[in-house]
Image (tube, rainbow, N blue to C red; front, side):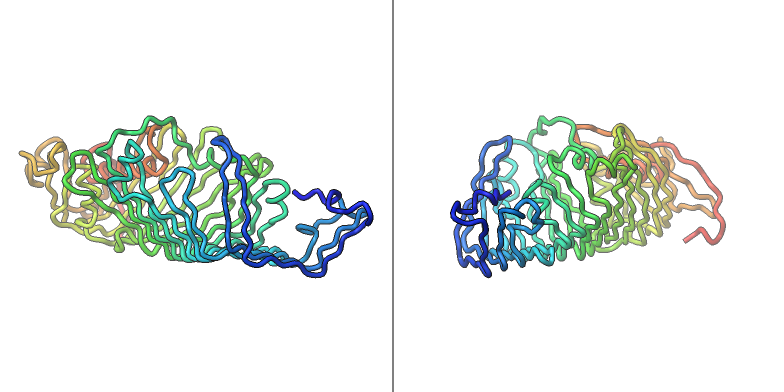
Length: 418
């Protein structure tokens, strides 16, 4: 914050400037954290403000940012190497209007400094390598004075347009020696500043996750395309948490550009057990389009089959997740894969597989009898939240197919069959 009294010279009791402007300036911003001091050097900085006024009698009563009106700032074509030396952050333009409460960033990029496989080797263990681009970022109703004076980040909304994120992990490297990754509630609660954003909107996003499994011949890839996400109540305000505030997420996307996913998450931020719940649906798609998931995690490969609809509902906490899955499909034919090689094993076809330990139906429901899969999964606390969400759903997929877990048969009404 600015000590305005020190700015007033002894020969006067006020300062007044009608208009002040900096053009193409250079400044250094010093960030101090647990890792030490980090210098951020900015060139091409433009700044302006109107009606700058300090009066010694009113100095502590002013609620104007920098004791001025119409504060505006602008930076163009900026690039910086991040402190970890693994990424470069750059953008075409950042502009701020204090009067309007708007902060805009045009063409943000976070660029890895190493290619996919050398990246993990540079870190020394398996790690997510992220290549990120965002066309536009806009904060509305941003309280800039709260941030500068009190380190509080308060905004009405955040909109991200045109997000493109590609993630790659090489699992042939050593697993990192890390402690329990944080759940979403923990990350919010443990921030070292007050955070309040009412609404976050993500429009037209593309996220791809590619993983080279240990001893695998090639990397497998899953993508989430045409993604739209609405997030509400992004906060760590203690009063709101004590009143039971929950982080709410509504998401819609296409799995590998084909099956439509709709999902809703309810995440009570103040929960001591980090409890949360989610539910959703997956629309029609070919079974073969799930092979990138099934072959590496359930060790089966679909030769034929059509997914009609999947419905899932899960309740979870820091320790385990439980729920149900209703998996509607037709004409399924699968191969059982060798767990080590990924090739067809001695038990290769659906017929002999069905005669073995498990009973895999070619159709679900069969007639009006639907096999409902059980979702039951303990959390691996060395893995990320996203891994927890995924393996929880995978337990429901395997149970629904009869590959593992428990099932329950229910009778459907005719209008329940897709």
